[in-house]
Image (cartoon, rainbow, N blue to C red):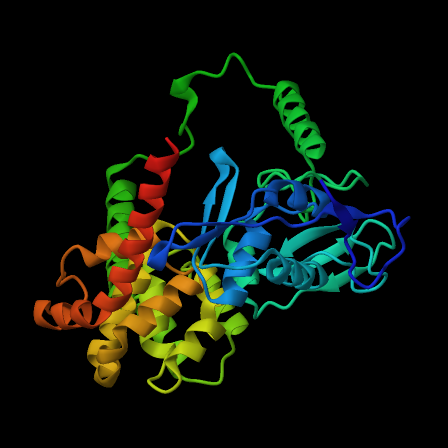
Length: 389
């Protein structure tokens, strides 16, 4: 297999860092045509990145759907694309997501902290930033490599072991030592083995007068607690009021959510969508606020809340956007806010969970064009798998 320099600006044949030259294979025809990259795993291993990352980068740059079949080592981009075109895009991926911003060395690891990705160079030790507005950055936040301790070596290319330095303060060894200290501390505690259960509370006044006094105090405390509970606002309402005030950036909004104990609550996503988003430039807003929305999690429950939140947003705040439902759904999909499976499940039937059934039907009707595109892409993939079998 032909190998080339990882950096396109270096022509020196003795340059240390090499990668396989990208190969492409076009399969299918018509709407089902696609490009398979047979050696993506080998390329990714040379770059110390999971193969899903450069493949996803191709999809974002080409505006094409991508598919990962890791078990079969197949990485697919919809449409017909030449090897030269993909190789050129790969160089773009390398410049943005691999090379050190200081010394241009490719030996870098990702460090993810507070939903910001940086590259830590193993050669010069410098840390360089990554464009967090790029859709691949969103995908990496949603699908990070597994934490690993920095070993000073170029990492492997497996998705679960590659390219991410641990940014926490404790390593696995530290945790083991902490566990040992806890156990040792427990073992060293001295207990009075002669202590009898009957000894508990011997110093408490149990006279009728004292008992009656404590009951009156308890009743008063419970009344005060009930009054406080009735006065307290629901955290979701407080959160919504905070966003509606305006003037808060996404970091401040996330900080407020954590303060209210809502940072992992899927219902907080609905509040954000209803209070932060406006009708104008909705697609640009979705892209801008994607990192904020992903901060609350990417579980199926969170994804359904995002879909439901935008249903309600269109119904209550921006009815003029309902005819553009397909574009909004496509944007949610392309920004990795909602997975294909969740969208297709949502599309099975209108629901009155977030809006009335008639409005839900209307939104589903206008979204059908995008839904059909997803279904056809899925059918083409299944047909190809059967042919290979």
